[in-house]
Length: 206
Image 1 (cartoon, rainbow, N blue to C red):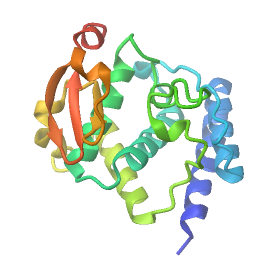
Image 2 (image 1 turned 90 degrees about the horizontal axis):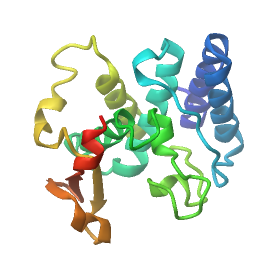
Image 3 (image 1 turned 180 degrees about the vertical axis):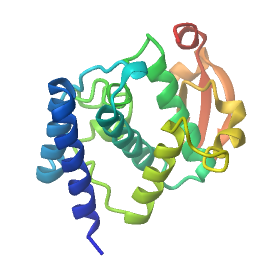
Image 4 (image 1 turned 120 degrees about the horizontal axis):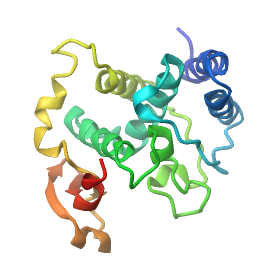
């Protein structure tokens, strides 16, 4: 069996090769991801280009799925499948809203080049984003693929029904913090160690 590092780097290499052939625009993104994975230089994150979700190529969607997997892994790998899906739903809702970058990668890495000013803390904490827990990483990949697959079976997408009340969630925070911004948003609910909210401003721009 390949090592986790080998699987991660190999996957990104495949994405980079296929994406570069499909579009120089996404090719630059994928190549950067490979370089970051190999050299573990995500301590100095770079801007991600914006992608239009409705017109993604297969290669672009692979990169987007990779970004969503990283978001699920780093933000919610210790949560239940419902908790992970709810976090992913926030990311997807933001990518659909004009209030945020128009791609999953863009949403996750927004302001990642600013220390402690990013949207998701793992992108700007100057710690490698390499997923070291193989079981959790595979689980994140499986979930992201199911959430992004329009042609998947009912069983594969059944997790979406279990988080129906959270389909409009646009924000969340851990239960052990009380950010000021949460007071301005509508409470949706709690799953595990995360409390979810929705913003009318963000939802109106979807």
